[in-house]
Image (cartoon, rainbow, N blue to C red; front, side, top):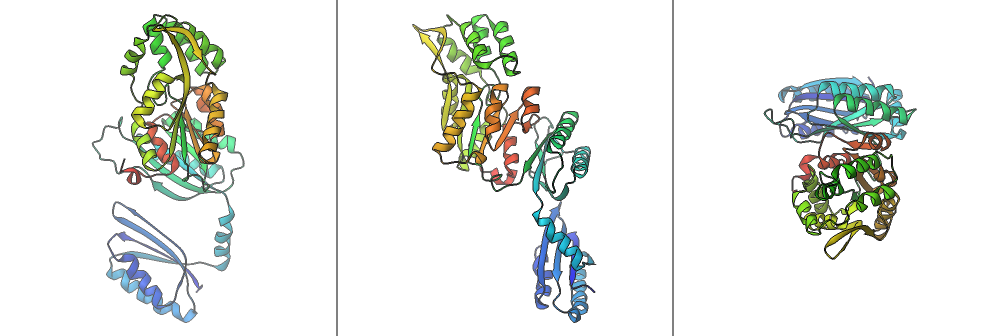
Length: 405
């Protein structure tokens, strides 16, 4: 018999199982080479790889283990492992590790089957599967639920772009979000999150709302859509839209502010980030008036947006200072990170429009949130099915770890 033995135990979980089994192993001086445990619906699966010090120990060890495991009402399997098999396993530690995160309103077998098929096709082996979302009641409204599982995979995909393309294809087909991240020290050590405002933190484009009040809603909305799709230069299109607001009464800003709605999950996300010590910022191509309102409401640390010029209580159709366009957002992200002594790898950027792509590419984790098709395709990561608090899953947090929020 090999002096390496893999022991797999299964059955209903109860206190003291691990201490009972490892206590016997301790009596025989076994060396533990690997150990893992999972419990699903109170059913335990427990595995341990041991090295038996002497050949004569094997028979009494197995006898004692079998007797104790039978007493505990469990099932067990023993598998000898050769030195060659063990060395192959050890050599695998040098392979790159990635995290595949599946987000949906409800997880289905088809989603897992399709994701695992793609990982296998690209030469990746699944080491662990973990549920990050909380337990879901059977009678929950699926439009309000959120579910997430995380795959820890190992290997070296030959074509990362093809892999991401395959995930993007099934994301749209199955109405799920799939994030593929390299598992580095920074993944759970982010410290800064910057947000676009319009259609990201709030469910509207403020300039479109102001335009409706000014009677030029359709004209401005058409320009906004073209700019967000990347068909127009942002700065030029922005000035064209602002010019159409000339003569609007200053009081309208408060009227519009009162009807703005926060995006699903925004308040929970910001509250959680603050409790965890993250720095947050709004980098917006919108207007400072509304960004400051959100800063006060949510406790955002930094705000950079455009200053709408107002004279004699009327909008002049101009903005003062430098326009916060895509390039400026990327610059501001770098400046804030430097000021806070935070590496860019520790920064997260979230936005929905083409003018957000520069900052998404600069951040360690760039997320296109409910974004236009061009932006979703261009960004490395996207969330479309859940609210903003789905970002917590991409960082690697379980619901149980953020319950204080």
